[in-house]
Length: 321
Image 1 (cartoon, rainbow, N blue to C red):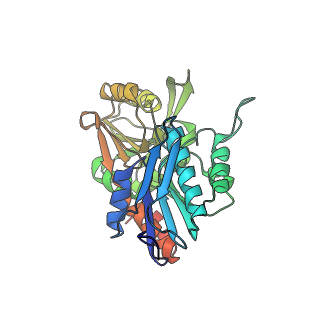
Image 2: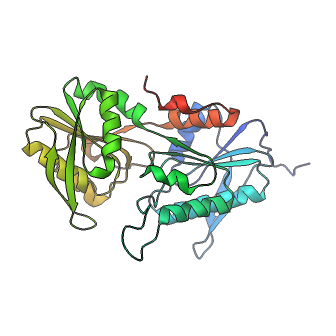
Image 3: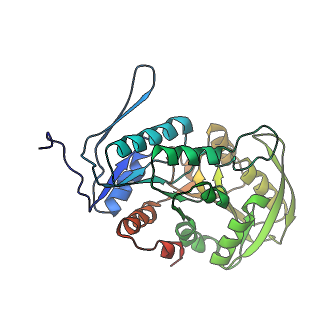
């Protein structure tokens, strides 16, 4: 007798969604031809988070889908509590599917008396009881090393490149808007069979940057700026202004995680960027009058979940068809 609680069959994929991005979780469930499990997510009067699984998840292979996007503290804490509840309910394996891994900008001590929050979050997830992480386009590769559990690091590039090929043609140039995204830019350039250029930037403050130098030829060519995330679009817009002055004909941007705030959306509308191509790794409520093109990564994440569940390799998901 289970008191009317529906069991989660141990050999099945048990898929649950936090409150951060249920629409993406539903798309993943549709790809996997399954349904999301029932979980109660509520708050105590003082704001503390309460979680209760409505299904019996004993011995289950559990996947919790939760990007730690805005508001990051709320979504991260909710994920940790969901993991703890699943561990205490005797789930066999708990995989956190984190399409966007928040707090990743602070991945090293680059000045005195600052934290390494990416490592802190890795510790919190591990201590909470997660068995495995599936994530996408981390802000820096070394964050994988902050975990002592398996990490499947996916890339949105196969999804984005398929869309960009028709946009830039054979005369395109991929442009890295700063030194930190050079490897990502070179990877895109190789996949698109395009040229490559780099913009040097100087950060004035947390919200403003200045692009000062360009290495590469962009005159009369279609450019694609690549980055893993943007919130104010300052880096992209400053680079786009420089590219326009150097004679670029059209400028697109490819960004995996679009976290644009109100100020960023306004600046994008007024910028030289034709379109930001991004994914639905985080909720995007405003398409900025058509300047934001959203591509779905639900099939990519769903296929990774399926392969992890049955023990297949996920390496082929990095390839571009």
